Amino acid sequence: MTAPLLDIEGLRIEVERTGAAVVDDVSFQIRSGEFLAVVGESGSGKTVAARAVLGLLPPGLRRVSGRIVLDGKDLAKVSPKHLRALRGPAVGMVFQEPMVSLNPAISVGRQMAEGLSLHLRLPRQEIRARCLDMLARVQIRDPAHTFDAYPHEFSGGMRQRIMLASVMLLKPKLLIADEPTTALDTLTQREVLDLMVDLARDHGTSVVLITHNLGLVARYAQRAVVMQQGRLVETGAARQILSAPQQVYTRQLVEALPRRTTGAVRRSAGELLMSVSGLKVEFGGRRRFFQRKPGMRAVDGVDLDIHAGETVAVVGGSGSGKTTLGRAMLRLIPSAAGQVRFRGKDVPAVADRDFRLSSQLVFQDPYSSLDPRMRVGDIVAEPLRHVTGLSAGDRAKRVDRMLDEVGLAGFGGRWPHELSGGQRQRIAIARAIVRDPLFVVADEPVSALDMTIQAQVLKLFERLQVRYGFACLFISHDLAAVEQVADRVVVMQGGRIVEQGSRDDIFDRPQHDYTKALLAAAPVLDFGKPDEQRVRA
Image (cartoon, rainbow, N blue to C red; front, side, top):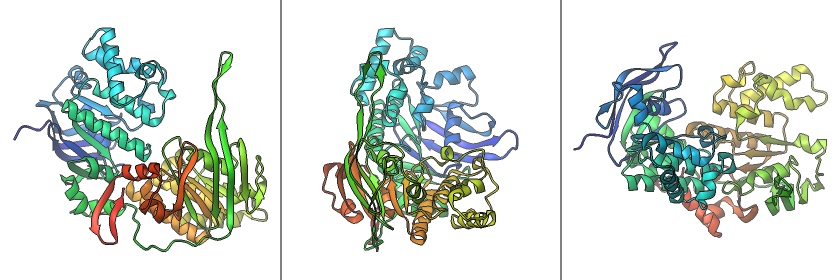
């Protein structure tokens, strides 16, 4: 057999200050043209091991032992100048958040051209032609406009396409993709990964996909490496690992996937709690010189009813109006037309006190929604300020009970930065539930969480809903999570509802072409069990 393109042997990376191992005795190989997935939870060492290949370890970390051989060259023995020369033509990397890795002050074209200028020293016209051709390859409609535009003018999916085009311009032998689709909706996720696979195949590029999404592993990877707490716990053919995992940790990852068993009993709906009719939300256009660009209608004539105690999930691609609908129902943003009713009464544009106290919102990113200057106990207690007749002692008891409910008893004295992502999301849920609301909007509450943490949060949310009886508008592009928690599903496209029905009707008998496309784009694992034949991941 030919020598592997990348050979990592006995890699150990430590924290300089303490000597604690972040990656410990990790060894794996990837051959030319192969697609390898590196799987594990946050903190398992996936990204650190990949960045070590490029010599881009974060400050405070150091490689203390092990070999990284790329195309026959031991990267530990090459000079920093030689290593810089390898970044791009030999190894390219697509990072998790393109808006962070793209410079907002520099046009897309200048950023794409940088690698070609440094490594190939081509004429300016040739560089522009190659950039435009690659932008067209990644299915960007107007390459010339994109070349002169800035990153903030594009959606997350478009920015990820731009990143992919920039990396693949130099035709690297190895492409490292670090969680490239975490924040993308199902359709955009599939489009970006299909483009990555096609470009890699055309250029003979090997791909290392770092992910916690097992569905993507099943769909795209030939082999998989499973990491836990910095160590490699299992490796082998991807489908074999997912269908018959040998190690306990791998089985836990697979079992954490949301599941829907046939014939599951759904909650019966109570009284009509929330309803909207003819709801429209418009965002005004920007003023440039003496003209104003036309506005955009984000929600266009939506009618929706939500009953007490039920979970209504809203799904759709990015820009479909899901989050705008939820915020408009809470009267957090103004509507251009339509009515919002709560318990049969109209909710004015400036919502009254009773409605505000009966409704809560769980944000997508708990870290940005939790005040870093407040302790956890104070954050959870904040909604109780408006409860009359509640003494300080009673307030403290209720906070303690709520923290215990979400599995974080004794965490009241901690700060948000001392918690993991899953723990912060539990605090956000506790804050929303602490004063017994009737209606909760959960906006992408598990999209950025690992599979095991996601499973814990979803089970917690279901248990709290059964106990406290609140209705929930569950906004998500994660169809697996929706399939587990939803009673009814609403599908939105372009600000309109294109289909709605019971969970089983939408997932098993979709009628609209857009719904069918969403379901087809979601990766599925087949375990061959009668009651769980297909598990969406």
